[in-house]
Image 1 (cartoon, rainbow, N blue to C red):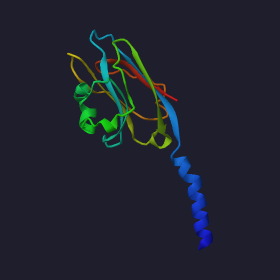
Image 2: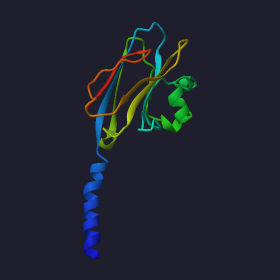
Image 3: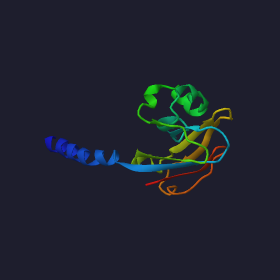
Image 4: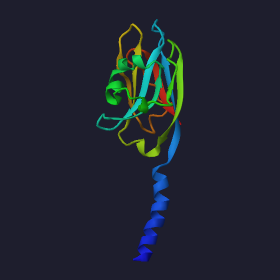
Amino acid sequence: MKRTLTCLAVSAALVVPGLAMARPVTLHTTLKNYGGDGAYLALYLTNSSGAYVRTLWVAGEKSKYYKHLTDWYQATSGKAAEINGITGASVGAGRTLKVTVDLEDALFDAGYSLNIDAAAEDMRDSPREISVPLTTAGAGQKVAGRRYVAGFNYGF
């Protein structure tokens, strides 16, 4: 029995770190020249059922505008704990936001999606402006948004 427990402990010590391995992933979001003020963006993950998992980055520092990032805001209820330390300035028209985040290997090819909600002052909100499956094959593949995003891709 003691030998079995020792084997289990050693196996777990070898396997568990592999499950928690993460890799740096760079997210590139380029906005269209839509002719308005800087856009607020919420970059976040959802699972295979479409349920919110976590926020990766929020571009835009004034929390009073977060309610316009409608899908993300509804999922997080705008809680500051969801975004502490992962915010930056809004992104100007025609500009690019480049953010590097650590994502666990287990998230890739497992049904998760990268999503971006977008909003610009005095313009229409754009929930799920981008929604792409998080796959290893999808790395480097550029996709266009619906209203404000000219192109988005992620890479390792």
